[in-house]
Image (cartoon, rainbow, N blue to C red):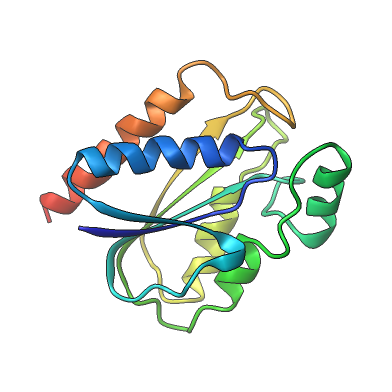
Amino acid sequence: MNVLMIVESCFGNTARVAGAIAAALREGGAQVSLVQADAAPAPAGEGLVLIGAPTHNMNLPTPASRSQARDKGGREPVTGVIEWIDALPTSLDAGRVAVFSTVTGGFMSGSASKQMVKKLRRHGVRDAERQDFQVLGTPGPLADGELERAGRWAGELVAAAVGR
């Protein structure tokens, strides 16, 4: 299975989750291309497209929220997942799509993964699995056990793809 993984990360937490997912997918036999969102190509028939982003202000990162992350010591990508999704053709060329985000948790934290699913519907994606991974504050770190949980989720994605 060929996998295209698109990731945006400002403080490194989402990138760490993406790394754990990619490692588990590779262990399951997948060929994984892990690409930063600001340099990512459009899907080209991969069996699985995975998209990951941090949650900023209860939503996907925007230029303004990326600038705020930079002011707090994070990386400020030129563009991110929201721009990548917006630039996609109206019909996505991918077998399956799954999304994940990092969240600080709590009732009012929102979820970038939920917003990605909404945006992807405009590109013909009707069924995208989603998962959120908890960070313990804006700069992190990830909550205990989240990298292991990311690996298990990746194993479930591989198993579901094989069972199709």
